[in-house]
Length: 202
Image 1: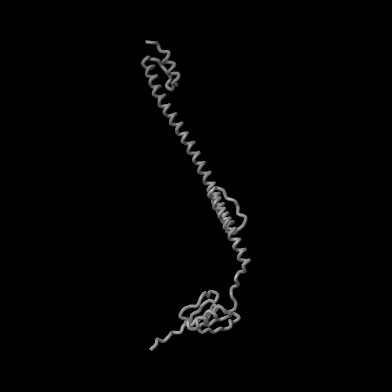
Image 2: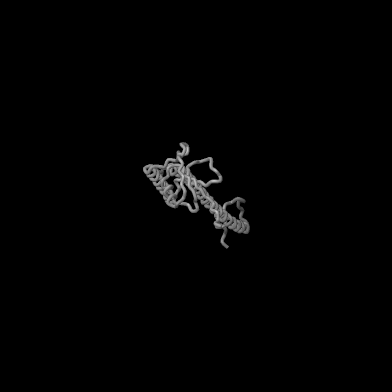
C-alpha cells in the first residue's frame, strides 16, 4: 500500500494581517526558486514568473486577484534616488574619516556636510577644548610645583648657611670670652670677626 502524500500548499501574498496559522505564506518579491515538496500554490496578485516556475515543476497553481488594500506595497526607490542617497552616505563617510584623521593629528576642521559628521565634530570639539583646558591647568600646576621646589631649595640653603654661621659665631665668642673681651649678645658675625682680629697676637 503506497504512503499517503501530505499536501503542502504555499500562499504567495503581500498581506500584512489575518493569517491562517494552519497555512504557509511567502512574500512574492522574495521569490527565488520553486520550493520542494509543494503540492499546490496560491498566488495573490500578478506574478507570472512564480506561476511559470511552479507550472514547470508540475505543481498546481491558482491565481487570485489581489484586493485593493493588499495591492499597496512599499514603493521601491528609483535608481536616481538610490544614487543620490549613496553619494550622500559616501560624502558623510569621507567627512567622518577626515575628522578621525584630524583628531590623530591634533587638529580638526568643521565638516562641509552631513548631520552625523557635524554632530561628531561638535562632540569632538567639546572634548578637544576640555583637553586643552586640562593641559593648560596641568602646565600651570607643574610651574607652581617647580617654583615651590626652588623656594624649598633656597630655604634649605639658607638654613644650612645659618647653621654654619651659628657654629662660627659660637667659636668667635669663645675666643673673645677667653681673651676677656666684651661684646654685644646679638653681635653679628662680622663684628665678632673684627673683634677677634683686633686681639693681641700671642
